[in-house]
Image (cartoon, rainbow, N blue to C red; front, side, top):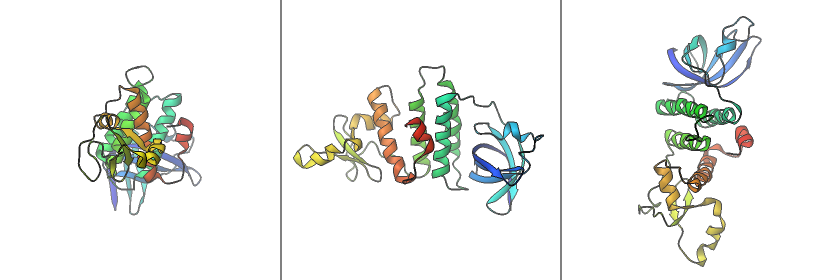
Length: 245
């Protein structure tokens, strides 16, 4: 019997279930991604109609014997994140990544905190020019890869352990890390694969989460897309199609 009491959670995905209920995928602080049935949530007089929405911080209590639990109680756990336009699509991108990459019942407390902070930063990005949406997304992607066991190797050359040199070029292999691109004609084919070639300075800046240089931010976007593609497979992300991230 699973019994979850007063757990911090966000809704990642919701769909209709039977006549008056919802089937929800929740991201919880201590239990990771779980599936619950919210019985009667679609009834006209249900309090769920205003609360059981994406990006609303919740406290939930659930119970059940199998993988699919029943939502027993829920309440607001804070201020709703107001995310207009592009920021809203960016937030759905986070949800889509978590739905695709997290296994159920695999706890990721640090990632939950990162998700909550990312929503806050996306909201602030509307008005604060020092916070950019692209920086916020890249940091979350980096934290997500680390949480699922695929932390990016950015400071040492793959297989050799040599420190990455800022001035050198590297082919980035998501499974091995940076591979030094030697000078010479034999590497011309690698250089043609420019999507996968990165300056050492960009790799080091990403390691330190320093995005002041616009080129670093562009390189981080390319690298994250390559690293995530290994785990996402061939099915495209709907939110990425809208955002082009």
